[in-house]
Image 1 (spheres, rainbow, N blue to C red):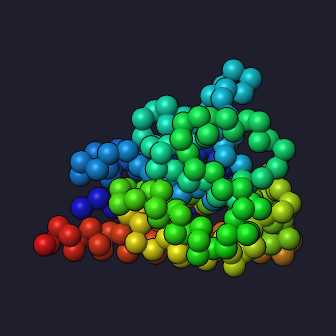
Image 2: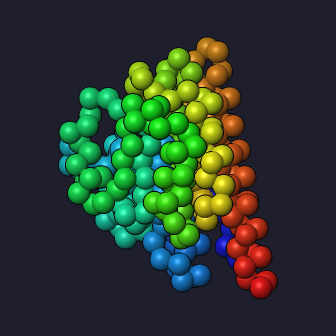
Image 3: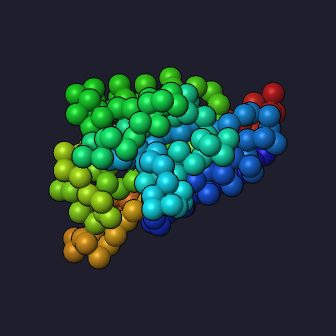
Length: 213
């Protein structure tokens, strides 16, 4: 039975490689197809090449789709906002579900989690959490902060509402402690990672039960 993988704290550009390695370890061996994605972030991170380089922190999910390891139609992006909207055409063109921050706040965590479960379905899913999904009032220690984001309570409630998703791995990224003298960002990030690990553990237990039957 495949294990779950997680990663914490580093730059967003590493997510494509982590999704690729998680997918290759967990999905094909069990005949379960490409990974879906629950992506909580201020930015879609589906931009194309930047100054001639396709590997950068603004484009890992585009790369994961093009590599054939991430299913865009089973991917939802939550909390999107800011002035870089024009860079995210690939998200829409490829079939990803995008929920902007203002929509997310109006919908509420329960409705968002329900929508996420609907989008990813029963297949293997990677959960990724960028701390800039949060408003800087809650997490100032982010590499690219954007005002108007989720509260810590809302973001954690969304994650917890994804219990039952077949989580095969996840990450928490873009934590920049040097920008946060309160340590709040690191504390929230650690709680998010713990929650993702709990989701992955519950999914692993459910897979073992299915196999035992």
